[in-house]
Length: 272
Image (tube, rainbow, N blue to C red; front, top):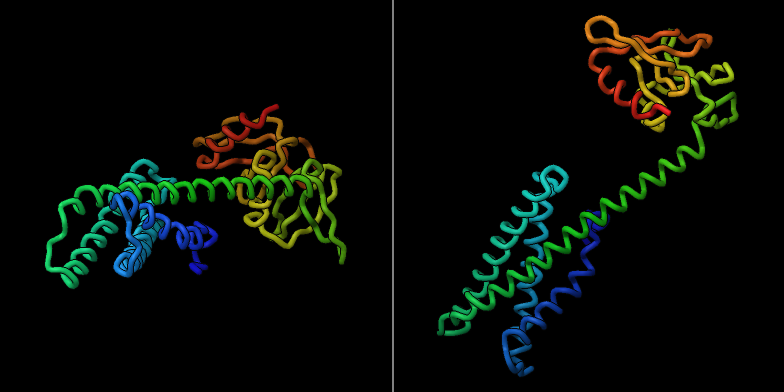
């Protein structure tokens, strides 16, 4: 049920139970004494079906807003529009459906109470449903954060894998000096001055590395913080990064004017 969205909201079974409960509570709030006869059962069934349709409208509205106005871009604005639009569409459907059913089965206009008391109750329930979906969103964000932290922890615990012949060897991050490209080939340089040939580009390698330990200086070099001794200004807003003396690595690497601000922030933030 709703397989496409279950990982995001996991709401199908919840509202399958919740909507009839809401309808039952509404009956007891609306009527001082509920007589469970065939007429009550019929109206209860109709109202429950209408409740499911109204919930579906609310849900579709929220999913639509997820695409055009995500929470993370403008949280307060998004919540405000969500409350306004879900009420507008859901209550609009409830009013229309109730008027049609009343016209088909009775000769009397809807009592004024429906447009004052009942719609106010529906407004409160729609706020509750919105609160649940906002809670789903933040719970999902928390779960994603926990998964990323666990992935990051595992990444740091394992290190970087390299293939040596038919054997896979894991090199701890603290024993990696740099990754570099020379004549179209990508290499890993260890602190023990060993070179390993890699079958991946620096673009793919960079996303596998802990960002607080490594920085991509330019298109040819990703270096570990431990081999950086400092930096100096160059012409046109560029920087010169100074490296510890190591074979196959230059002692200074030019950092572009575009990358320079990010490098300075990273270098200061990772200083011991």
